[in-house]
Structure formats: structure tokens, C-alpha cells
Length: 106
Image 1 (tube, rainbow, N blue to C red):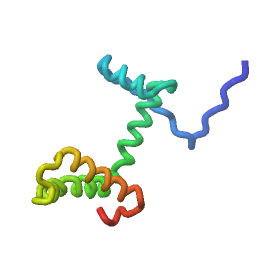
Image 2: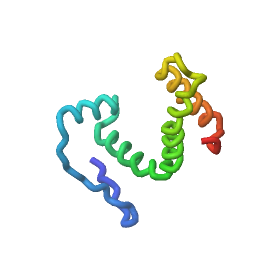
Image 3: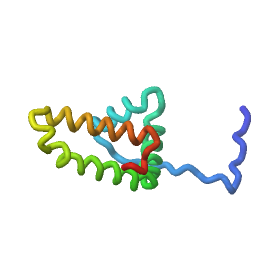
């Protein structure tokens, strides 16, 4: 049987970690992982959690825009309309604006 090639000194070692999770969380991770190993799903989610720091200002901006909507949707022109449907339409419009490349409008 051939030997494994030696690891170069510049190549970092992968750390092995052990921690406990509930059976429910394990099931959710397994479902999210699909055909991939659960450990890979955990690594992917950990990496993503650190990457979201760069997007945080845009996320805060969108949340601010959402929180600013209700007073504008409760004026005289909106009396009698379904408030939830109106709010949903406002969120969809905001989403369309963001996906259309008009982030500076948020």
C-alpha cells in the first residue's frame, strides 16, 4: 500500500474539535447538509457567520428601512386596506429595489 505524502510545514493542520449538540439540532443539520457530511455543513455555516460581518451595514440599512415603513403605511390614503398585505407589498418593493442594484436608495 502506498504511503501518504508527507505534509509540508507550510500546510496548516486541521483541528479536531468535539462538542455536544441536541438530537433535534443534529437532525436539522443533517437535513440542511443533504448528501454532504454534517461536519462540512457546520464548517460552511461557521465560515458564513464570520463573512456576514462585511454585509452587516447593508443588513442594518435594510432593517432600518423596514422599521420605518409602518408609519407611512398607516396614513389616510391606506384606511381600510389590509395592513399585512400592504406591509408585504412594501417589503417586496424594497427587495426589488435592492436586487435591481439600487442599494443606495435604502
